[in-house]
Image 1 (cartoon, one colour):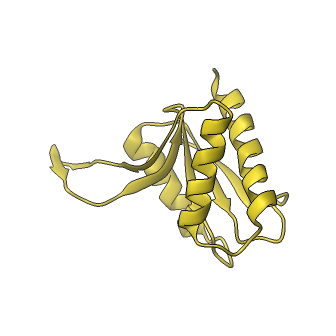
Image 2 (cartoon, rainbow, N blue to C red):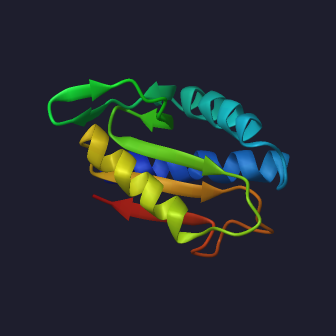
Length: 125
């Protein structure tokens, strides 16, 4: 399955979760629901995946974790915040670099609707 098909199906799952649960819940609720939805449509997903940080050839034991990784290709970073800030985008970009992945989706479930470009942001490494 190519990366565009994965992101298309993932976005569909994001919309399904949002339509069912609505805005304003904790990120962990959306993570669990989205994991369920992605598995239901046949996508392999892992959650809370550790991200190693290597500094000058030393692996640092830092607690960074990816919210979701779909088909080992697309990172999904889940937020439930009033406003999305640049730091959220930078966080996902850093996760992409550290994990050597090309594409991530930054999703803010605390939104009136998910159609605007501030609710689902595609980040490319």
